[in-house]
Length: 379
Image 1 (cartoon, helix red, strand yellow):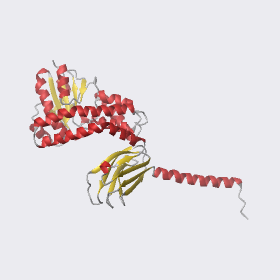
Image 2: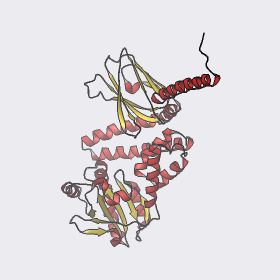
Image 3: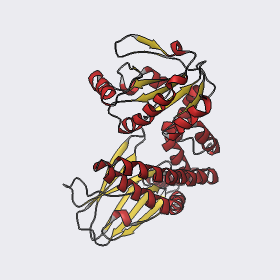
Image 4: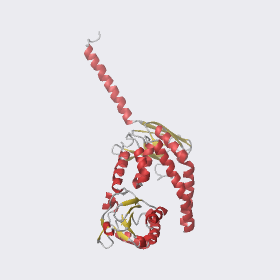
């Protein structure tokens, strides 16, 4: 005879069992809410696939999987779609083969199929990866053209062929502009996409208000809630402090350790240039700034460079080598430079143009843009 169990006891046991199964189900789901199934038919056994996933603190953690019979599997947990870079190594001792591809990892299943080349493998995943593939198809021809020009420019620079290098730069500018136009159009037509968030995040390190503002305002509140979105919000808010129409002033030590204050140049148009001796793009831009300086210095124009160097000798040597005749200041704190922090400068080169009253009238003018702007105001 079975023991006599009351209805209440029986019900409680059933509820307890349901709770245990539900907890186990949701715990497992929380631990493994994505799966990557890969098949590289010609990859050697023991080859390693590596990705870097953010943990609960947002720190990137290395995750590896070994290939066996052409197959590999990765499982894990993500809160939101993430842009992931996947790397291929022939074995565990190899430092890498240069083979990689980026993709967007969603919850659910991502499949990767190819032969022995990860860079040419096909990545199929969720909604965000589909959107990323759409963007890549729209950029395909432009990316190919830009890569060809970059290769030519690298060769011309190595051969010290300045005229060829300049010609290639001139050809590359409209290609780059078209790439930007395609990306901007994608953001505006996909405001709730994490691909759009990634595109806006990439340009948030060097904000040009006229381009960045409309893209930032287009993004939905949902995509701005994750850590990357919060960084975009913080950078946008910081950029407001140096937006056109704002008063700009600072004090920094000059090359002799004497304090210089920007407002001491009141009555002049001043380009404040954030740079450093170790910054190759900065050094490449210096000739453009020098050309503009020599052209307009007699028309009430001045330049002040704020160096994000930490080594004074390297800073002053770069000034000497590049033959920069304008004012140079730095507190030698690198990216912790007081002015850089206040202006949220996360990458260089960057610059700010102020009018004779110390009011910001433009930011991040490069090459011909700087000359065109100065020519329009210094007549």
